[in-house]
Structures are given as C-alpha cells and as structure tokens.
Amino acid sequence: MSKSDPSLGQQGPRAGLSRRARDFFILGFCFCSVLFLLAATGELDFIVAFAAMAVLASVAFAYFVGSAAFLPVRSTARTQAPATVTRRLDSVQLLRALPLPAFEVDGDKRIVAFNEHADLILRLDGRVNPRASTVIRSPALLSAIDRIGRGEGDESLSVEVDSGPDETWRAHVSRPTGAEQTLVVLEDLTPVHRAARARSDFLANASHELRTPLTALSGFIETMRGPAKDDTGSWPRFLDIMAGESERMSRLIADLLSLSRIEFSEHISPSEHEDFTKIVLDATEALQPIASERSVTLELVGAEGALPVIAHRDEIMQVVENLLTNALKYTPAGGKVTVFYGNTPSMVEARAKAGHGWREGERMTLLPAAGRPGKPDPSVWLRIEDQGPGIEREHLPRLGERFYRADQSRGGKITGTGLGLAIVKHIMAHHRGGLAVETRLGKGSAFGIWLPAARI
Ligand SMILES: Nc1ncnc2c1ncn2[C@@H]1O[C@H](COP(=O)(O)OP(=O)(O)OP(=O)(O)O)[C@@H](O)[C@H]1O
Ligand SMILES: [Mg+2]
Image (cartoon, rainbow, N blue to C red; front, top):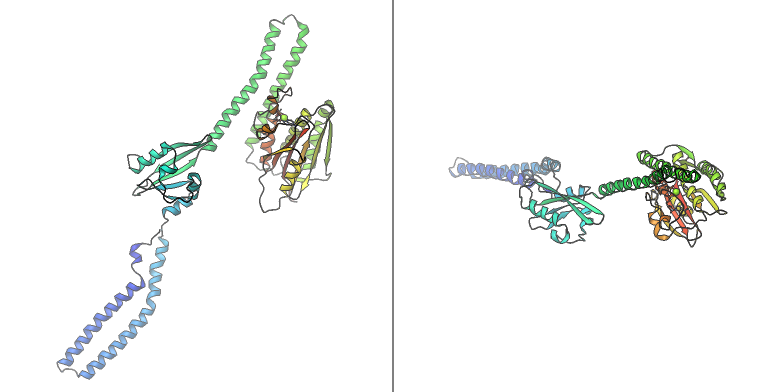
C-alpha cells in the first residue's frame, strides 16, 4: 500500500512533545543544581532556594502544558498536508486505472496483482497468487514473461497470442526499471483482425459476383462472333440474356456503392426531421408498378397521421424498398404483401410489433436496437409480411451478411446479389434502430424494423 514520505512521517506531535520535555528537564535540572549549590554553600537560605525551585517548577510546568496544547495542531498541519500531496499510486491502483487487461508476475512466476479486465480474461476466479503457467496457455507469452523476468537483454516484448478460433491478443511484457515484477498488458486485436478478414472476404465476394455476369457476357459475345455468327435468329435470345447479366452487374455496382456510401457516413448521425408515414407511403407507391407486374396485391395498414423521426430520408426509403422488393420477389403471383407500420411508447413494444406477429413463426433479431435503458424511448416500427416460401431456420442468423443468399442452396431461380439486407442492417444501425425476421416455412416471411421516434 501507499506510504507517506518517511522523513515527514517521523515528525508527529509525539516527537515534538518529547523533545520539548527533554529541553525543559535539562534547563530545570541546571537551574535547580545552581540553587542547591548556593544553598549548600550558605550563600542562599535553604527555604528561599526551595521556594525559588517550586516557583520555577510551577512556571515551567504551566508554560510546558500551555504551549504543548498548540503543538499537535501545528504539527499536523505541517506534517500531514504535504504527505497527502506526495502520496503515490501503488501498482494495484495503477492496474485498476488501466482500460486494458493487465497483471504483474513476480520472480516466482506467480500472478501477484491484476485488474478486473485481466480477471475476466484469465478466469482467475478468486485464486490467490496462481502460478502464471496454470492460467496462461500460450507458450509464447510464458516464455516472454520468463525472459523479461530474468532480465535477459530486452526491456519489453510484444507477442501475439491466439486464444480461440476467432480471438487474437497482443501481450506487451515489460519490467519497469527497478521493479521486481514483470508487467503484462494485453491488447485485443480481434476486431482489427476481423475487420481485415471482412475486407478481404468482401473483395473476394465482390469480384466473384462481378466475374460471373462478365463471364456470361463474354461467353455470349464469343458465341455470336463464332458458332452463332450466321444464326441471327438466336441472337434476340442471346441479347436478352446479355441484357439481364449487364443489369445484374449494374445492380451489384449500385449496391456496392450504396454500402460504401453508408459506411462512409456512418459516423454522422441523422439529423433531419422526417415523417416516417410519408417515407413508407412513397416507397410503397414507388414499388406498386412492380407489384402489379407480378400480380401481387400490395396492402398498407397503418396510421394516417405523421410519425416524426430523425432520419436520413433516402436511407430509410432504401430500407423500405429493399424489404419490399424481397417480399414482392418471393411472393407468388396472386399473393399478397402487407406493410404494417405505426408508433409505440417504447422500443420494446416497437420491436414486438415489428418482429412478432405469428404465434407459430420462427423469429430472430438480426440487429438489436441500441436503446437507452431506463429512459422513455418512443419509437416507430414497420413490418412487411409476404406469402413467399419462408426461410429455413438455419439461414436466419446469417441474413444481413454481405452476399449471403439463403435460396442459393435451394437452387432457387430468383436472382439477387445478397447485399440488400446487409444495406438494411447498416442503415438501421446508423439510425440506432433494429431489424428482425419472422418466418413460417411454406407460408411466408416478415421483416421488421424499428427506430427511435423524434421528440416534438
Ligand atoms: N421475403 C423473403 N422471403 C424469402 N427469402 C428472403 C426474403 N428476403 C430475403 N430472403 C433471403 O435472404 C437473402 C438475402 O436477401 P438480400 O435482400 O440481402 O439479397 P438478395 O435479395 O438476394 O439480393 P439484392 O437484394 O442484393 O438484390 C435472399 O437471397 C433470400 O434467400
Ligand atoms: Mg434483396
């Protein structure tokens, strides 16, 4: 634990008192000796000498007691105040103040101090001074602790530690000058590694998705130049396929651009006051022609009045359009797609309205909204129900991942890039909202979103 400066700590009120008592005793003894000698040699009457000694002793005692009464106050003020100023943080306090997992290992290779982050990672479970080798499984880290502990050359070392299939840490091992313990600070590299992997997966997927229609296009061009050069009758069919493929490519590029635009502005919170009802009505109206073309009835069920939200209009419009496009795409001709929307006094209720409509449905929250616990959070919600084939349970957790398509494994003929829900998820996160899916195999699916309403 911390200690005050030793030189200050010695000067307590007791020390001051004993020094003064000693001085008074020496002075009194000398004066009394002089009086006694005078009395013994007859220079002074014994009675007078004793009376003088008694008076002197009383005055000295009165002065000593009187002055001593002030002594503790003065000495406390002088000694304790500087002690508080010079108080140092000890290693446990320093470890606790660190926002990273950190611990100290002594010369016997025992963990002698740690903070709560390290406790969670190392799972110390209240063990007292456990051996480092019993809690740390990484040979690299153990040998780094050993090397630094023995003071072999290096002053500090950084080693990467894999602590699971998906977890990577960097351990900074050092021994501060003059310290007996080795300090280990852990840094979580998992998010950095995950982001790097996601980036390379994304690039691989994007180039693969672009290559497929490109290969088809160049294949048909070759065919039309070569074997089918004179078979002009088959050209319209080839041209139709080529038009479809180039459309697919431009859709993919539009989605990729959209994703990167959303990611780019992710740190800018939406600030515009918008009417959620109007956005829902506009998006539905924009997709009415596609519904009619596919002979699907598009129905709107919701409040007519304005539902104010703080949102980015184009982004929320894109969310509704992406969800509606999917619903229309998977609903067979003659079926119905229903758009429900409204507002609720709390986010929990909005989430229930958006994501929980069928008793026997399989449901999953794909993005939990970042609500503020304990605060009123009036919200708006939207739920789009379709009469499509539904989605198998095992696909639900992966919906919203870039390029993930549940019907690919079913060999479905419905095309898509698998970016629509990823865009929805991103936009909803940007609006501190949520996304949920509910599905009944063979009967239909429902996708729901919710986000905070604006306070008027
Ligand atoms: N309403 C739905 N009914 C059934 N399956 C759906 C529905 N909505 C989404 N899915 C499944 O989720 C997958 C991902 O959807 P998403 O919108 O992200 O991609 P997409 O529609 O295939 O392509 P994109 O929207 O990028 O053109 C789809 O491929 C499909 O398997
Ligand atoms: Mg889609």
